[in-house]
Amino acid sequence: MEQEPQTQEQFKHIVRIANTDIDGNRKLVDALRKIKGIGFAVANAVCHLAQVDAMKKAGYMLPEEVKKVDDIIANASSMVPVWMLNRRKNLEDGIDRHMVGADLTFAQESDIRFMKQIRSYKGVRHTIGAPVRGQRTRSNFRKNKGKVMGVIKKKEAAQAAAPAKEEKGKGGKEAKK
View 1: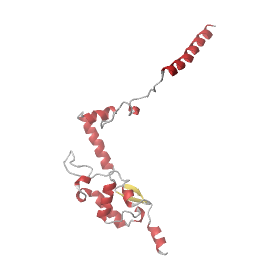
View 2: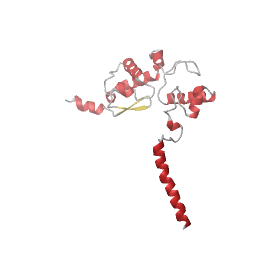
View 3: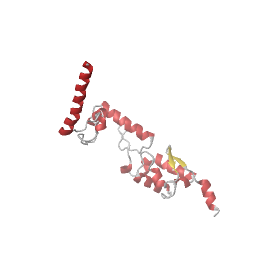
View 4: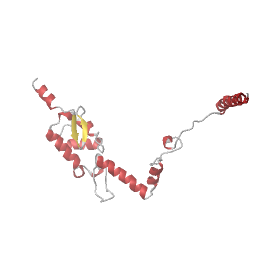
């Protein structure tokens, strides 16, 4: 019973890992997935490499465990298999890397900018706001095309046009009086 208050004091509602605030109430493996660039497989690999219980709540991690997990995420390129990395054969230097957080966002934006600059197919699609990966555009992606016009059936169109004509006729007679 004396250990419960001690663990309550050690509990942190927010844990900082890889420059990202993580919810301390979530399991560690799920909390790590909130970091941009870390998915299910990489989160499990990080927990295994750090020798930390993946089902433990992130708020109960010791400072040494947090530092160990942070170091493994920073150096994941050399610790996890190549197929798990998210930047294989980088265009600038040809090195396999795993990027997380703001670095990953910057790299993605840089790649899109480069594709637009060299006028590749994907770059042109990004420029005009069309789908990039071959999706159909007839029935989807209407928000990119501007205001959407609905389909009006002939009978409904005739009924909608009739009151409009009557209003114009009345307005003309009243204006002459």
